[in-house]
Amino acid sequence: MNSIPLNIKENARLFVGKYSMRTDSYDFQYEAVESSTLRQCMASMALSKEQFASITRLDIAGLEIISLDGIQDLPELEYAYIQHTNISSIDELANLHKLRIISLSYSPVHYLPRGGIDGLEHLSIDWVPLDSYAQLSEFKDLKRLRFSYNQRNEKNASSVAEELMLRGVD
Image 1 (cartoon, one colour):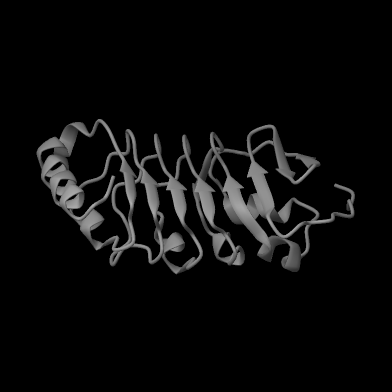
Image 2: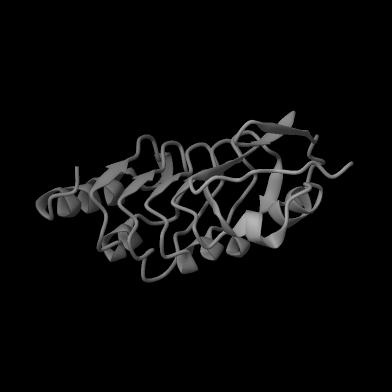
């Protein structure tokens, strides 16, 4: 891939998908191979470390990656759209302190990071097969939670949802 000079703005966005990656108005063609990691996807892009560090939004919806390894190189990340992936662990997100919104829907995540994610305000976990919803009570800054359908733990989900509603979570 040839290097393309980029002018990444303050609110830089990185969109990663099966067919293209886009940051601002620049497109990168990339087709993910099954079982690749986010780091492998990022390595194929012509962006400097500083440009990656300025990214505030990440969209990897539908990308068949299995790991968020590399996401720690995005310290300014505020929004992570991780729907329809093969990612089963989101532990790497726990140290991204500017992260405010995460959408994990339709991804095979079975547990959430212990202690929650500081600063996280909105979490979407529709059709996510969590083993337990109890850890949601550790997300102290959570203002909005969206979840539906968890066949294995529906009773547990209801009691945690009730507790969060009492705390003012929408």
